Image (cartoon, rainbow, N blue to C red; front, side, top):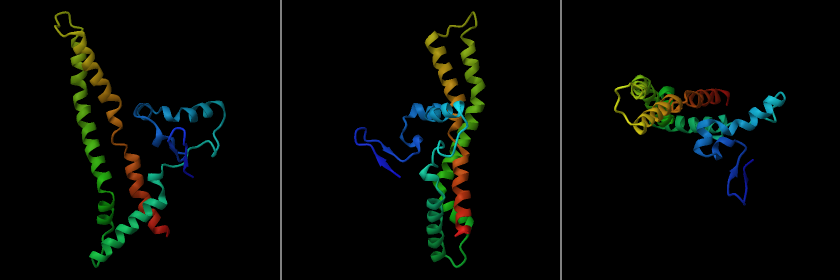
Length: 168
């Protein structure tokens, strides 16, 4: 059930990640309430957040089915693989891009750490501001940019679409 809160203008569909700011999303602060409850007592099904509406099986199945029927109109023997690729092309493209960016950042990471540690050499002429800049870039690339690819939701999209079609 989607509830609109007039005072704040925020739409609450029960899934908190959709309505949080970027800092809360990056630090996973939006699940703090769930962790607090779980720390005090065992979690029940009423405590768990509902699934992200973008990942619900009914929606994904319907979208894949629509793409399948479009494919079937165009070809005598439609291909499930081509239908999946057409349906989830943007998600899979982003996943490919993010995974390659993550790999590149892992290769660059040691260089960034070397730049930060060179500040502590006795004969270094690097300023504190420059060292802090390199440290910040190093932290960002090591901690948060690695979560860009998020392979689970992308794999979930494809898996749920296929399973949903077979269960119809």
